[in-house]
Image (tube, rainbow, N blue to C red; front, side, top):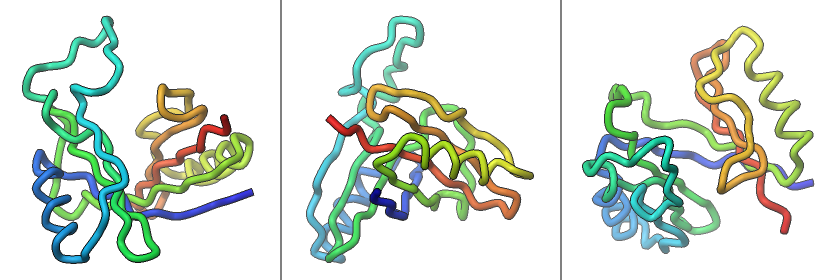
Length: 141
């Protein structure tokens, strides 16, 4: 059962620029990059035009380490210093659930643990110390 902790940078509309910068600074390799406009459409929540070119998710390989990125969705608050979260990546839904439930004790759920188009079990929680974690379960196809 694999478990990894990955730094996740939440940017304020400049994720593409940051990716190019870190790609050069670290000699990093872009493993994945997707904009909100490239995501599957949800007719219940039409995508605003200003969001289409923003990065919904990207991953760089920096040496032996992964570094993830996303732009905050338009309208979401952004405060400098809050843009770094930790993504906990697991290959087991039950382990993800146990971790999520433990972290939410005395904390605040930002997004309930749920199935998404990119993960069988994903959620966001800020623990009682103010550290925000994204719990991501890898799809075992």
